[in-house]
Image: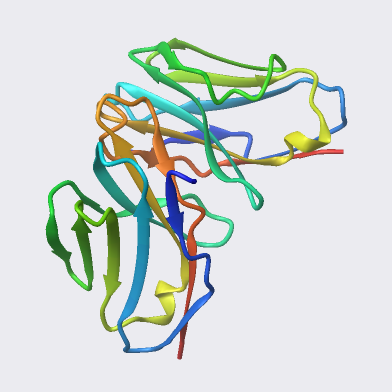
Amino acid sequence: QKEVEQNSGPLSVPEGAIASLNCTYSDRGSQSFFWYRQYSGKSPELIMSIYSNGDKEDGRFTAQLNKASQYVSLLIRDSQPSDSATYLCAVGLSGANNLFFGTGTRLTVIP
Amino acid sequence: DAGVIQSPRHEVTEMGQEVTLRCKPISGHNSLFWYRQTMMRGLELLIYFNNNVPIDDSGMPEDRFSAKMPNASFSTLKIQPSEPRDSAVYFCASSLGTVQETQYFGPGTRLLVL
């Protein structure tokens, strides 16, 4: 079983809709959670980090963490064509030397 | 701040040649990471330095790969000899502290081994 799993997509949503990206992880000791956005041919850039159960909002982005169910999600409200990218989920274990990255979900926002 | 700087941005070489990738982390960051990204395997951690000391190199594929961090502002990843299966994008990232903190990625080096 992979440490971090994401639906590879592609996920297509119309402009203005809500895009929902999901990520599950296998280790209950995981303590830090990150969403990165990666445009084609570019490097990953941080969108959100979340450490506690519940929701964390930043502009059009909301990260949701549920440690009991071992999933973290990213909601993008009012999706824009510029949001079209691959979204990587990363999970860190306390005391570990590694962030485990999912393989990413490709999102396409259709104008 | 200029962010994480990597060079070269693109490298094309022939099998058997030595390849050296370079990275300058963000000033003040204590941790540096080398990743490799391919379509098949996604983003994989190769090695992690903290305060210039290699902490975890379990992701280094084999003895052909080596990494150094002689000071807080410079790191190299060397492949000798290179093989076609080493073709990938290699990213360097840095963070203020440990793995648990946000990592900032450089632009990457796109390596093609013929």
